[in-house]
Length: 122
Image (tube, rainbow, N blue to C red; front, side, top):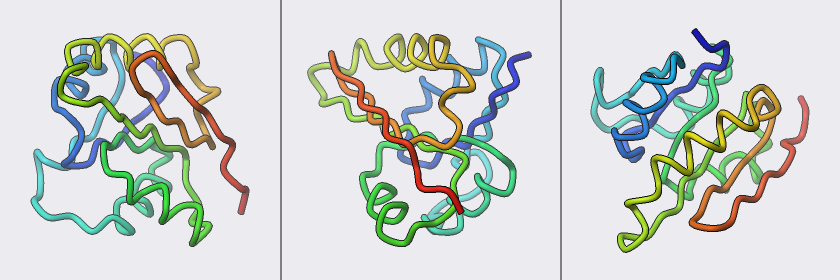
């Protein structure tokens, strides 16, 4: 079992959840337990549980950088329809290569480009 833990919001493609679980990660998928979650509540839950948030919703970036909410980390997945076939493998490889360095960061994962920014501390 890998020590990194994740919280996948409803926008996160479930193929990513399945792949990370297959790699031994603890992934809590919001879509399995509720519909229409509130973004701020998910940020708070992920932070409390020390889980990195997996999302395809750009709104989380605004919430974190504008409100300076505490976060264990976020991976924003931005793959257009014509590139989605490489999405799962790209996210898997990124998580495997970066590991615990992802804690406290905001990462944007796109086809052929990944940007990682450190989040402000509390």
